[in-house]
Length: 47
Length: 167
Image (cartoon, chains in turn blue, brown):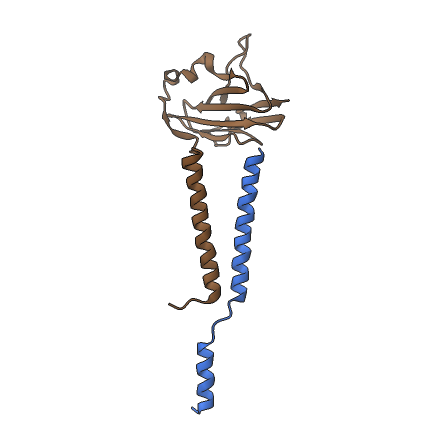
């Protein structure tokens, strides 16, 4: 294995996985939970 | 252990959410005194008269003070006993002025029933052996149907009544 290739392999192992999509889906889930929780609270308080 | 920056974000928010919900739960339980409607008050289902609230003459709606009412109900297969009117006929319709506080107390001599005034916060299980109690303030005028929402047998759908909150 030449040094060039070894360098490439090393950098790809160290680079962090891209979790942008995961962050967005986790945030969407969090917002859904909060909106439904406050929706139920408002329904309870208004009755 | 190595954590991705984003993982720290959602773990942090998750832990904050957990703590916030636990604090709200504790506030509701210990400060506001919220508890399940069947809160451990026992009654002999074969002898409901042992509790004064369920004496025949105390059933139904009773005004106890200005703007305060008590509603005692015996839910049985397949009827809600809301007391009787002057002529001795069973009551199935009650009227409450808007803004009143009502303490609902219910029990069952036979099987599990539900007691739900659809569209209000009065919604509870009625279990034999227990007294279910709940106090609510009725602010919104309208007619609300009393229904059983725990399947209790072949006559389940015949259990109903109405409550009118009048201005």
